[in-house]
Length: 301
Length: 94
Image 1 (spheres, helix red, strand yellow):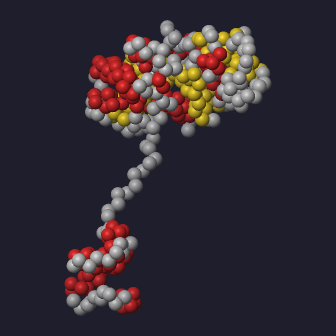
Image 2 (cartoon, chains in turn purple, cyan):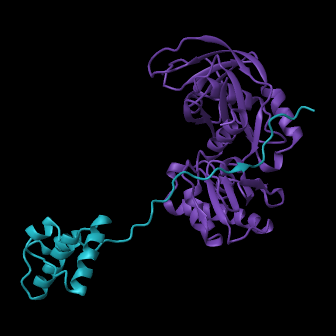
Image 3 (cartoon, one colour):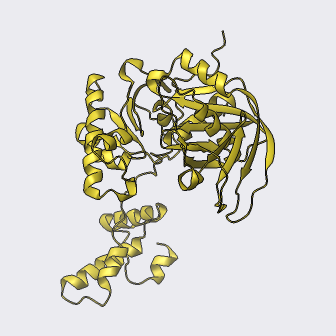
């Protein structure tokens, strides 16, 4: 048995297992014939339900039919299945029975959504795959059965991040993603952190959205100037603060800032919430917290 | 008086004087708490030399090294208290 925590975001998939934390791009692409295969470490070709997909950096290099999970009505998209199976392979857990943990936005943390995801992911999945483990080495084609336990562990995004750095006082948590901002509140009583649903929600607007609405749609983050980054971060933080005010968040309460853009939005968040801080692993907080919670509940650690 | 104080002829105490007896007892108490009485004496002497305009080379460093003992706060406990609870779902089967 092996625990596997997967945070399948819009931009990247973050994974934690007993073998550590890893990330790979969220976008997948139908695999086609390559005229000049380069065999770069991490390139993965995987056949799931009769369809061949590329996963990893190869998608940006070679893929011409990019597929992403649009997080429409449900996160239970076939793309999620490929991402989870790829996570098992990248984590070196092929052959183990997998206890899987996944995240859903706060507003989607309901039975219907969990059921859809469970139906998509649980059970035995017969796949073939080839993973480039060392650059320039031609990978071997392998067949495997990936066995995901029927019981799947779910935590809302943001609430999971809180568990990467739980506090012995009331805490408000911002979790900034590419398509969403999750806001979560926990009240602390004795040794227990109690999730407060009325002070938690999802804003369906994230870093990608603020870029799109500011005409930076096709500008990679690394090519943004500092000033452009600050302008976008300010707009994103404003959305989050407006939602926090609707939820009656208090400026006196300790406030966590998670997400890949935590350092960019923090100065603006701090103005509204002076007790704001960035935890140690703001980018991987969700998947680290999910794994910790799974250890506690499933393994009684 | 201990042998150490007799051999070290820099400072002697007259145990018949209530004030000097108090100073000797206090010096012994300092030793018990790992504070250096001789370090304090040397610092006072150097301060005196500096005060009369006769500071030896390196005296500033010496004074810093032998500054009076500070109260050191106990190290904070890095092991975080356990927090339980939260919201999660593991098995929705009815």
